[in-house]
Image (tube, rainbow, N blue to C red; front, top):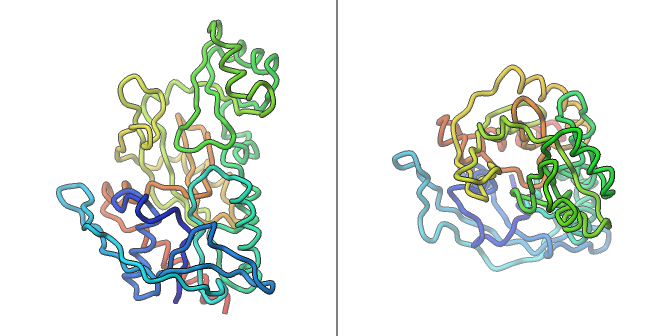
Length: 324
C-alpha cells in the first residue's frame, strides 16, 4: 500500500514526540510505501488532486531507559515528484493548526482524492466542520459551563456567574493565547479587548475547572473508540497542561466517566469522518476535540508499552480492504 502524509516540514518534527512520525514508522514497518508532502504543495489539475511527493525512509526511534531516542539523521527523502493523490491508498492530513484560509483550500483539494476512492484521515469535510473549540458545544451534557462570544457585557456576566474562567482563542493551538481570568480583575477590559481583537472575533469562555491542577487528560480515539490516554500536568506557576508549554506527561487510566464521554461523542465523530481524534478532558468534563493533528501517541506508547501507530495503520488496512 501507499501512504501519503501531509505534514509540516520534516526538520521541524520531533521524532520522539510527534504522532505523525509514529504513523509513518508503523506504515514503513509493515512494508508500505511512505510519502510526504506539505499543504502548499497540493494542486488541483484536470479535476484531480495532485501533490509534490517525496518518498521517505525513516530510522525508527528506540525506547532507551524510558525515553525515545532518535538517530541523526532520522529520515531520508527522495527528490519531489508530482503525482496524483489517487495513487495513494491513504492520505493523512497532519498539518498543525491554526486552521487558516490556505489550510481550508487544501481540504477542498483533498475532497477530489477522497471522491476518487482514497481514504483521507481525517475527512476533509470533517476538518472543515470541526473547529477544535466549537465542536465540543455539540455535546452540552459532557462539557463545563461554556459560552462563545465577542461581546464584553456577555462575557462579563458569565465571569460574574462563574467567578473564574478560561479565555480561549477559537483558532489557537497547543495552549497558545489561553488566559485565566477571575471576577474583579482590573485587567478585564484589556484582556477582553486583546482576546476578541476589540470585539471583532468571538472567543470561547469556559468555567475554570480546579481539577486542571491535577492535569489535562488527552484521550486518543480511533474510529470512535478510546485506544489510550495520557495526562498533561501543569508545571510551576503555569495553569496550562499542554506539553508545548512545558506540561509534564504522566501515565493515566481511562475511567468510566471518560468512556461515557467517548460514547457521547463517537457517533458524531464517525458521521463526520473524524477517525483519529484527541479529546481533552479535565475533571470529567470534555473541554476540546482535537482533529487536525492530535498528538499523544508517543507518550502513551512510552508509558503503556503499546504501539498505537501500528493499531492505526492496521485499521487503515482493514478500511481499505472494505472499500475494494
